[in-house]
Length: 414
Image (cartoon, rainbow, N blue to C red; front, side, top):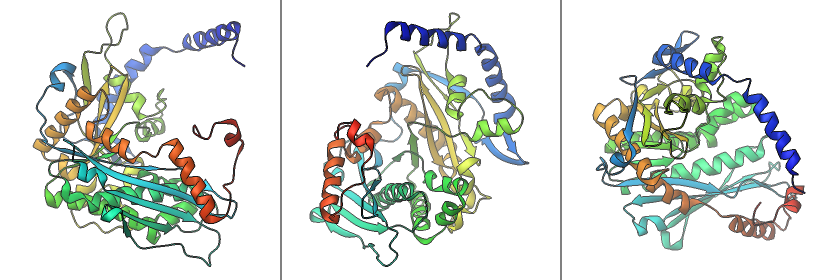
């Protein structure tokens, strides 16, 4: 059954009544005040949680011009990991499978063939250990293993998903880092932020994050930063859907009623350009300069954070998360580009990363080509997910625990 025209009209009336109570001019004024008065040195409880790496400014560049700009990094490598999503079986096992791949621009077909596959398993049966070591497949082009995750009373699906995703991604990055000549861009943040959220989410998960297996996954990312610094090859992360709330939370704590649901909405307001009639101008990309972030989940990798107990071989400041926001008005989408402070404290590297990000977004109208390729290689399609789940059912001799969504939606869509 679909909505009748009268229902659509009634809903539209509701939207207009809501819009009539929102003064966007006030939002613009508040955003400008936040930019000029707070973001140059955003503090919480006397601790700086956000500050510029160098200058504090918003920039803009013509889309057509920057798309044709010569790239500072002749080659770019992208890396991503995809999963089948957590699956619960009637025998009590909860399983996820992650599949990581690295892509390059220009293309390197030999590199694209290499994959890392991780299956994570949660079981309430403490007498069985499903762990395996890494073992090769596909004539050595694939490495795979099974990781038996620590037992938790709740959140088993979240645990198997996060550990599969991040172990596959970080292991593949370390295994194939020697193939990277100029720049490595992760599809997503530079650190496993979902694991860091465990500390704030639940005491049980917070304790789990410091246990051996999750800690080993986090350590992979720390070692990746060190490997990149040693090789003098910049490491970055391209966040396609930034959703953090570190800035707006601090603003709210200061008594400022921030109208934005998250930081991405705030930066979109700051970076969008409109004419006198309110029409969005789409001829230029806009961006912020770089920030050092020490709030929210970024606090764990701050110089005064403890990296959840991981030893850091470099100056602790080198690991701090820094970021810039790029806004593409053609799609009305903000992107977040991250890099360790070890690289962005160098003005030349910082400018090169900025130019590369703007040029790639302008040309691709979205994520950099190497990241898009890695996403395509690592993605596990709906039909493949269904096939893999059936194979697990056969291997476990146990059916998947189904829900009404399996009945409601076609298997190829769910």
